Length: 170
Image (tube, rainbow, N blue to C red; front, side, top):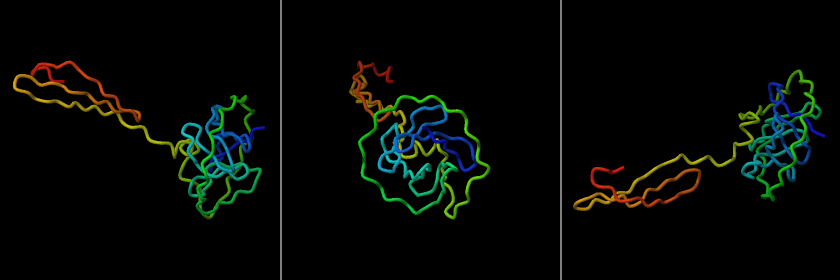
């Protein structure tokens, strides 16, 4: 059975398979739940506590909620011990759209600054921008490109190039 999750504005933002998985509104696997905490499906990093049908950010503020259980904010949670990544679940059938709650509860500590979609990737590593650097060595007659270093997406490759003449420097 899947539990709908709502934003502070009472919009449907995702679904929870209690104590197992979180899905977005398209039923794509977004996070797994282990030991009362949510972990990113993409990176495996901890993204926050799960209490009943509610998910919280790393500051203890609610990100998404369900009106079937009382909602309370709390202080910053302690970081849990890392867990083994869950096996990706079979994509469930999309449930019938739930009734929208009338209003979200007002909390003393407020709601998370993240939307549900932002929260799901908030702790994932940022992609490295593509950078190209050409190292050249000048000799008396010609310039030789020693190596071209391409860094991107967290990896680096070194490619040897032919030696261009002085007028062909890349």
